[in-house]
Length: 197
Image (cartoon, rainbow, N blue to C red; front, side, top):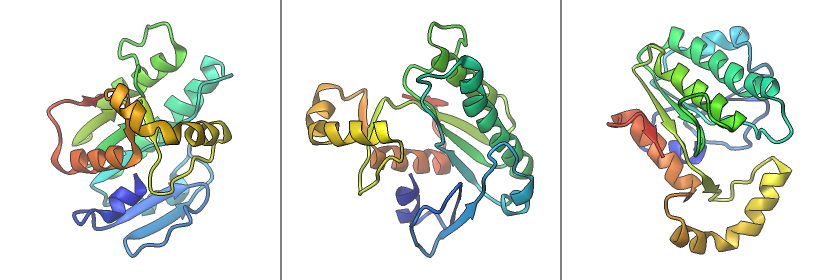
């Protein structure tokens, strides 16, 4: 997502918020290193004046209770969204969810219920627009590597098979470039559908 935003001429500046530096340098890029994603008060004055947010933070639900996953997914996302909508009500909020998220909030899978609950909450907030992206498998491109060891291993094993997987499962297999470009485009132009599978 970051590299696609930096490469687009219509994007004039990019601010990242993370626990550590991205390690990238670019004239458009400003990085905010921030430890507590449940409390944005210490950096609040640096989060004003933006047209879009690309919220791509997430964790695997593997081994977590619903309470833990809710806190690290729903509560964490809403802490950012509530701060940003207050400071930037004209903002478009793009949320990277996941294929199978459950808008009914009552399905069988805990992670899907929580993701659906987040989506529903975002749609009810007074942003200029809120859009949800629900990809399944995203192949990292341009040298991007997951910091999660299990994901890095999975991508390493499946990477050579990406062209075949893309042909066999075109609805479920994409790459980081395509997702990034889609998010930038929707943030700038909107879309007829709030949920993009």
